[in-house]
Figure (cartoon, rainbow, N blue to C red):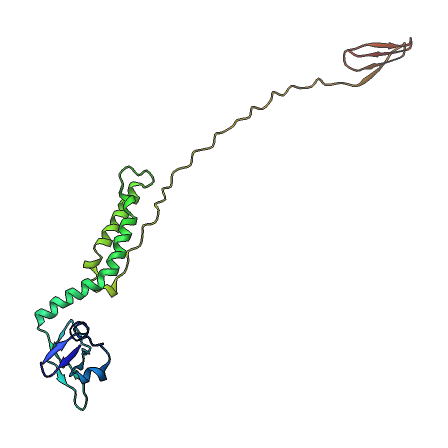
Length: 210
């Protein structure tokens, strides 16, 4: 921005080129045509509680340049309240985008026919999603946000199916016949008894298996 004291006109860089065919930035050349560079540097201020007022261009002492003077004024309580709400909304923008993404990512938990979510889990997810929606009201100051935790899977314990009982029948036990060993003596020789079979071995000795 440039100022021409003779005409008291503020001229932009574009006007210097279009109207006067002069190159902005060449201050020494522009001074020869009567154009003075204007410094425009607003001071820092708290826009929530204050405002700045831009004054008319004036010459900088001991300098060929001009500047815009600024003054800082305090806002009224009503104006401060409006700006505080604006600031709160601006501060919440990145957190609101993150909140909206978390809601989008958990939409599937509320589908009625989604078989992988139990009724208990669905209720927990609904509570979690409502807490996300309530964040701006719960935490007016975005710096105080505590994000709700995602629900853990609900583990349902059921009684295990009993193992089938296998019964083994004991085999019937039969007694083996007792074998008695005995020797009898007779006039004709010796008789040995082994069961129920009889054999003769010679004329003097007979083995009887009775």
